[in-house]
Image 1 (cartoon, helix red, strand yellow):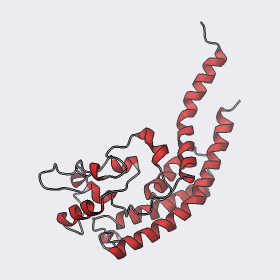
Image 2 (cartoon, helix red, strand yellow; image 1 turned 60 degrees about the vertical axis):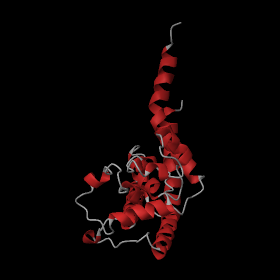
Image 3 (tube, helix red, strand yellow; image 1 turned 30 degrees about the horizontal axis):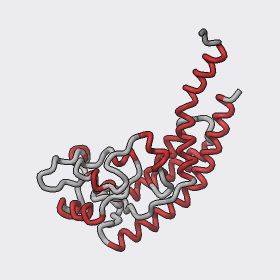
Image 4 (tube, one colour; image 1 turned 120 degrees about the vertical axis):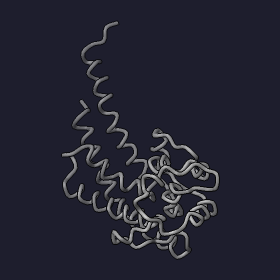
Length: 218
C-alpha cells in the first residue's frame, strides 16, 4: 500500500516534534513531582569515591586540576555512611564505578527514565532549564532566558560549594555537607532554589506549549 503525501508529512512532523515533546514532558513531570531534599549534593562525592582495591574514579582524572578540601578517607566515609539519593541521569553516569551501587534509586539510570525520575528538588534539573530554553529559541523571551541563566549559575555554585573540592580560589566558600550544619545549610539553599525554579519552569512549559502548537499542530 502506498503512503499518501499527507501521511508522509504527518510521520515527518511527529518525528521532528518528538524531541520537543520530550522536554515538554520533563518540564510537566518535574512540576508535579515530589522533591527530594535530603540528597545533600553527594553526587560530586560519589564521583570521587575510591575505596581500597577499587578502580580509580574517572573524575579523579578530569578534575585533577582542582584540589580536594577533604582527604580520600573522608570522601569514602561520607559516601558509605549516608549513601546516595541521586535522581539525575547525567549526574549518575559520572559516578565512580564503586559508588553507583550505593545509590538508593538504582545503580544505573537510562535516559528514558528521566521523565519518571526528575524531581523539583534537584539542582541539576534546574541547571538543565537553560539548555531546555535554548532548544526553542527565539520562542523564549530574553528575560526568561536570563532567569534560566541566573538560576543555573546559582545552582552550580551550590553544587560546587557542597562538593569535596576546594574552590575558594574561585570565590566559592564550602558548604561542608560532611557536617550536620553544612547539610542544614545545603537543604535551606536547595529549597530556596527549588522555589525560585518553580515560576521559571512554569513559564518555560508555557513557551513549549505555544511552540509545539504553532510548529506542529494543523
